[in-house]
Length: 99
Image (cartoon, rainbow, N blue to C red; front, side, top):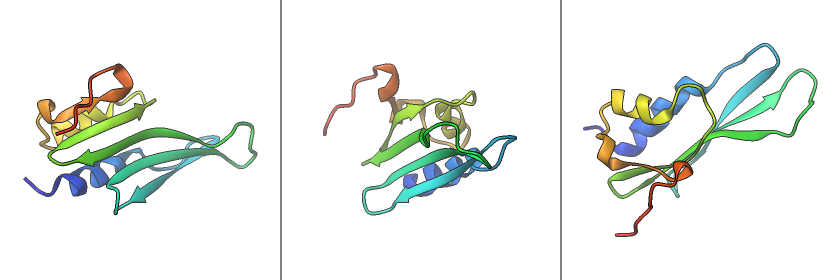
């Protein structure tokens, strides 16, 4: 399997783009292996910018801290080849163990 951080980063690109009244941007911290997508209203700001989805790589696991999408990141990662047992849905209460 390709490096896990590359799979996560490439998969999150599917969540970046423009809509009728918003635009999403990728946020990447390679050093900490944190990958997110931020949404901003455009052309007129009505709401604060916010995180749509954020995930981080921890060893051989992907920890999804938040997912406010209608296309769950967990499903996209499984389709990309990441085993479900290597994905932790922290936002849904799954336990993040340190190891």
